[in-house]
Image 1: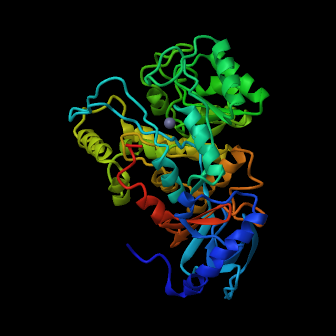
Image 2: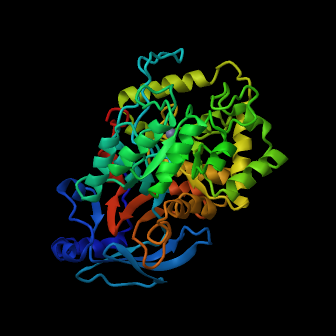
Length: 498
Ligand SMILES: [Zn+2]
């Protein structure tokens, strides 16, 4: 393991003792509770005042990186952003020399599940036994997200909703490590589903009751799923909106245009799951290709695309890009899975991932070329953003098994650059845009004075070379700096297990 910081951060280390004492006085002024011992284990720096000197700031607005800045954190907030200068560490002030490092806002992950997809008795023919299950990753996922730089996330569909709500509570109370969480309610699914753990709606009244029940218990978003009817979706949206809660959807039975007109706030999976041009599409029923036909037929600069994008933009519908989960379809030239990703997987998860990957090479040719779908989706996401649409980002773990929390969030940003966004634009999509969607852009999403100190310290320069975004070293959440590597070490071999 490489040393984490250059030698000249020695100033900080010599202060470690006095800082521990100062932590006591800090709690008096802090608006956040004292971290538990379990959380303290992962804290790299906590002080009344922290100065990050000589750092490159990528502020999350999409503007150019600012070289050589000093960023001052006081308590949980960003107190100042100044020209770079040497600063002496004093009692109560921790100083980092960050020559060669970049600072960006914490990632706002918008499709960040807290579960794993388990395929029981998966074999080398790619077959598994029913039922498909999604075990909770309540231990490993929050640590992986935080380690990867995610400081705020939406679960985008819950299975053990009480566990997710309690997790959010325990993280906010300082008892467990993890990001801030927008807990999404149980999936709003129609009368049938692939997933045995989802509730089933049989009428609009079921949708209304589900939304009311979970909103009463603290759920802050909802997600509609593939077999919901338009009437059920409308009931869910209207009930949620009355309570100021937003609804997203991974749809199939309802087209993007229909959902936009019903008032949905967000659509998941870029343009991969719009079914409006699928030849067998019937109202309220999912089509066989689940949107592949539509995407293949929808040229990003064609008239149908323009009309769809205009409809989405005029109805203020956001789109969540989840490119990592589709990347296996993108064709050759893909980078190998990261060693750290393999290390985070449980032995069983790793075995399943390799079984999947082996099979994906010689599989029979699909009816629709996946590489065409990939190209069309990238183009449509770009056109949507260019037309003023709010594009969000999230990894959708776990797909075939190698899209992991945190790592997947970083990969999503890299793939947005592949889609044609500049690195700073891609970073904005994964930070400020998410904050805007959540209505929290006054507090989070960019590096600005007065905002929460939710920040990532990265070795290198992702504004020039986006793959540097993988080099996260410290993640600040509410002004407390967490050690990324320590968080990763604590979940080695666990993802897929718990
Ligand atoms: Zn998902």
